[in-house]
Image: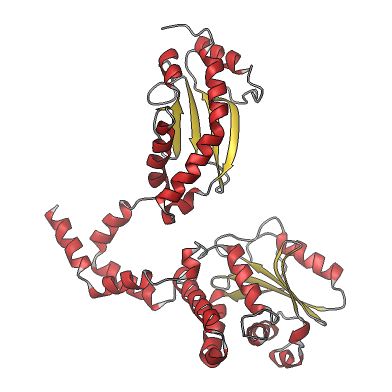
Length: 391
């Protein structure tokens, strides 16, 4: 323990560590919005900067710099960097999510199809589909296909066309850095700060090329034991959320059930007394519980409330299910052991909880439980009336 205290003391007194901490506390709109690795938000911001008609003050500077890079690539459709000077940027149309294409740049003689990938990869022949659509709808235009990734990686999906130009966020940040350096005095101060925040976000969290990333590596090498201990014991969204769910659920008079990471389980006091602990699935042997899955569900933007009968005493299981069949939203369970007869999804992004005010998160949970309460009470009342034998 004393060794750990000494390690932490050295870490906290390290000037580089203090510099990192202060830098990360500097306001950054993209980090504040949790948009650092969101492909949709990156695509929207890039489309905004590429559009000469927008109010950012860049005019066509960023669009032309981007087109120079694309036209200069060997895979470009019979264009080179010099051709950009003859492009009438005023006639450029920048479209988002056109036929599922992330960004489409439509010009009188050219069209640029941009597929943006940060943490995901191309799939379902999507690149081939975009190429086919472009060929059908823009037969008279030169067509340029761009695959944008953090480091200019090649497509990984099957049947990906060879025509896709590999472009990187390194190139994006370099172009924007050059533009802010050369044209900074002409750009409105609010927009300039926004672009500087964006460059910082890209370099720090996507390409990891910021000076701060190098400093982090240096600090880690000097204080490996202390930082490993911190990392292994860091709180995550799952850990933070459980006590908030528990607090709200208990405030409604419910009884908490068996605990497990990513799940919140509960029942009513009446059912806790009525149903014997004869189950074989949960640690506390409950035979029936309401369960909120806020971590393991396939959809990370939602959580699900379930009514679950666990494997155990068949007589008790059947009695619970027979009573629940009177519920108008009852659905025949598909599982042979774990029998879920009711499920409802609610909009809730668990991973964002770690960055939000706990008071605001609790309000979201309160809204969900309040909405679910009539259903919980109806199901509970029906089961209370069941003829469940005592063991």
